[in-house]
Length: 121
Image (cartoon, rainbow, N blue to C red; front, side):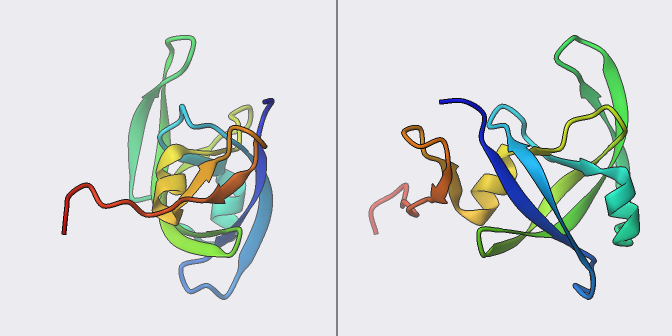
C-alpha cells in the first residue's frame, strides 16, 4: 500500500492565522506531531510536557497542546505534540478518530468513516 501523506491545516486558537503542511499518516502513532516552530508561529501554547518512548527505546520529552486542525474539510481540536528538528511530522490515530477519517487500505488514501453505534438503540 505504501505510505499515506496528507495535508493538515493548523490554526491559531483564535483561528485568525493558519499554516498548511504535509504529514505522514501513522495509525501506530496515538498523537499528531507538528513542528514546534509552526506551533510557535501560530501562537499555540504548550499545556504541559510529556514523556514519549521512541521506536528505538529512548525516552524523549515534548510539549503538547490542543490544536485546531482541518483535514479534508473536517475540523476538530486535536492533541498535538510539538516536534523538534529531526522528529517526523505525523498525523496520528486520535486525530483520525476525532475527525471521522480512516485510511482506506485499497487506495492508501484517507476517507470519511461511517459512524457506528456500539449498542442497539
